[in-house]
View 1 (cartoon, helix red, strand yellow):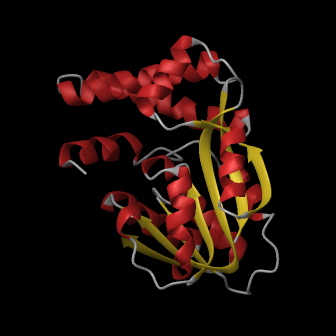
View 2 (cartoon, rainbow, N blue to C red):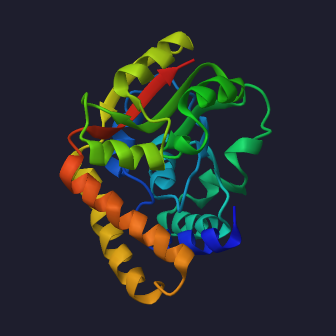
Length: 248
């Protein structure tokens, strides 16, 4: 990642409650579908950000969590938060890209990726990451998806720019079937949880527009953030952020 872009992400996201749509509540709901796990399951959290959800997974599972991200300040914040929350011994953090994972084959009971798979590709992740998952283990991924047909041009153009490979929920379900995972559950993240993400997101955007607008590259990113908030306010009935709970 370009260092200037990384610095921007740190400035923007480090102190936000969560770094992507979702919440501890949606984490608990997704985890609740997992059955017959070992007493202390081994869990891989891909794109962990500062660990709000990672810590909730640790509380729920009492397991051994390997949490990876490529931005070191996020990992440092996760370690601090885990210590305060009393789960530091359960979480191992690694500065590692999802594109260069080299874990042992079939080494995890659960692979979790919350709102970060867009960097990699939903279907590609189901194919490539499977080798790290034990037989009968679970893959939990949350992903942006169309939930209504024929979205207005403004929202369609936004997603075509930001995430060209976004698919409908039905298409994602078909991918899961074709890759021969057992679908345990799928559910949309609640609107309340999305507002709990976008409200501080909008506030941070406004703050940084005052302090960072002299940097053309940052200004472009902030303007994109403004558009994202407006698109959510006007058109969120057409798309959602959906958890897919699958079994290998």
